[in-house]
Length: 86
Image (cartoon, rainbow, N blue to C red):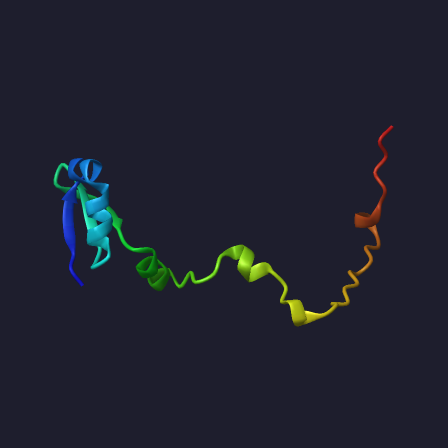
């Protein structure tokens, strides 16, 4: 894995070069000599974060799950009062 340093000006002038460099390792983008951003490939990002699936993918119910019985408990007492909107 090769780490590349690039100024923000160089990044602005050659974003394709930064993307190409990110294929072989992280690209540290600097501003006035200080690191401000790191560009990594999506594969490396997913490896680092463990984000292999989106939130929507995680919430989708599998097709073979069948029906799920769901009976929420009835609210009794103060929480079940009807609001008067007069």
